[in-house]
Image: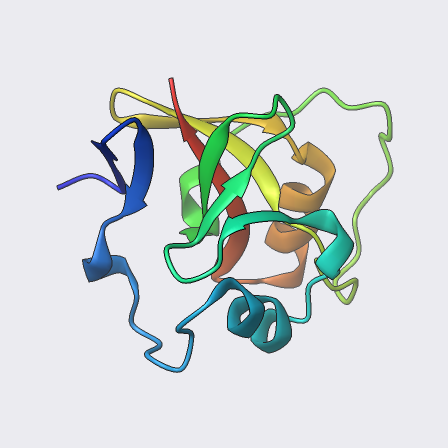
Length: 127
């Protein structure tokens, strides 16, 4: 099963992805991951449903940074990213077929790779 499944016109998390049972709500996720609360518009706290940039329903989750390690980004900031800067807001991606397409957060993803992070917070929408 993929990360998302369409259920009654909204997205639901594949529960197999949640290895950390201490995260029962989005509020828990924000607190544990040290995210900026204002970067996330919550629709359903317990189902991890949030609003994406386009105002559509999406899922707040974590994705493996390894999904993006071989991706070349063209960004406005062409700095060399040094380890140590914490990621405090999720990237936004679209899940299309079998791949994830970053629509917002190339710099955060590059920083997560430089940090050696295993996962990155992500707001995921279906294509």
